[in-house]
Length: 404
Image (cartoon, rainbow, N blue to C red; front, side, top):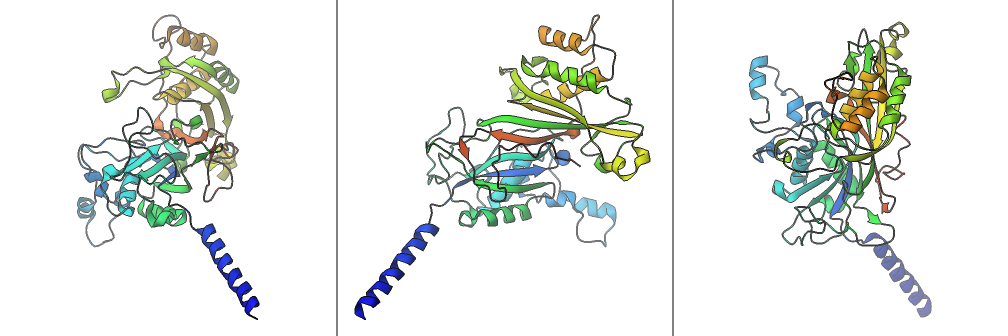
């Protein structure tokens, strides 16, 4: 009897210890979020403001009417919160503002949101990644050369503050999405990834990305689709596009080239810096959408409007490079100029042929037709996504993506 009691007691102690060992883990101090946003009302992914007061605004109110309906419209507009003069609205700032409150109203300069891509004003994204963490007073020295802020070495780096809600990822995403404005949402989250080999190497979403895919959507014809006007560029002066000529442009633009002629002018303090302008374009695909918007709703409108997509995948991109490439493809596909003559001349002279026999206009496609659809990371990184069963580097969903 006494022996049986000892056996039961031992089994109880062992089971309790095992459960505790399985449930107790170090607290997460950094995580990677996957962000989706409509860039129409944003000044890009990141934007520098003179003051931090923009973080105190509830950016939901920018898109929504005040609750009171008794006042006149002019009175309601006077009460509507807005960004102050000299300040602009950015995706990064919206996320930092929400995180600062979730961390317990910490100062904005303590919150770090490291994005994988700095999209321009008006550009959308369905697959942007960002590393989030909060700097504590015990943060150690810089772990990534060239970066201005301390960076966590692993997802459990104790030199940084624990993620809100005791690093409960599901609770964190839910709270973030409730606080974020309606035009930006977090669609997935993972603890800061680690290397499969077990090395203690810090992850950075921009430095460790190996491929990025952008999609540009435009429509041609007598009428445009008003439902998708925020995400589709309508070119009323062109009625059709030669897909064979467009494919020829894609063939010439693919590969490793010096794309300095496809780069936009530097902004602000960037004008004095030197930049590597050699990029590798892995793939460019051009195709017509079918069964969407006006075309899908009414067959008789299919002859009035056609929507096309250009997917461009590369290792990196210069400022406005994708939009200048799209502009060149569209111009050469709807004109009498030979694509090989113009593009080879651009790569040879490293400038646009604005004069001479082969003069050709430089077209920068509008930003609202561009969307970041995928970012691929090196396979050495191991993610633990909350909702997705596949790794963030999977690109199988790009072909089926519809931006509306």
